[in-house]
Amino acid sequence: MAKRIDTGEGRAALDEVHAAVAEGEKPPRAALATAVRYLLQLLDEKAPGNSVEVRVPPFGAVQVIQGPRHTRGTPPNVVEMDAATWIAVATGSERWADAAASGRISASGTRADLSDVLPLRP
Image 1 (cartoon, one colour):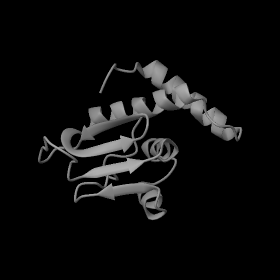
Image 2 (tube, helix red, strand yellow; image 1 turned 90 degrees about the horizontal axis):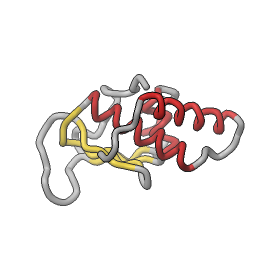
Image 3 (cartoon, rainbow, N blue to C red; image 1 turned 180 degrees about the vertical axis):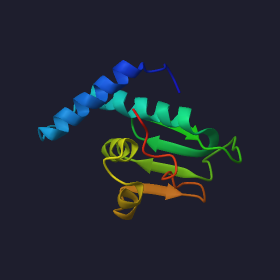
Image 4 (tube, helix red, strand yellow; image 1 turned 45 degrees about the horizontal axis):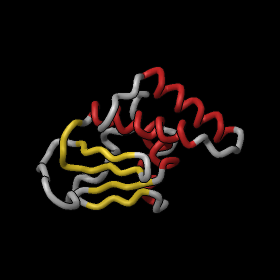
């Protein structure tokens, strides 16, 4: 992951995203990008490793969870979702199982269930 996002900056971006959503507005792209990357950073800190790749296009991706390491091509365990879904499951406003059951999370591989490490504590 690139530049480390300061806790204050990350929380401010999350607050800005939550406020926009509460008003029925589209969150500013910069705030959305920072919020997504901040939560990916927290996930990496909480569950370091290289066996699962979590993707939130177009804002970021991170490899997490201890286990077999991959070095080439697509990893065997991939989780992908949009920014709104990632923020919801990462902050606990939606359960992982509910978002996955609704089809908003694409998860492949035996380690691709993140319910044991979510929600995060931003």
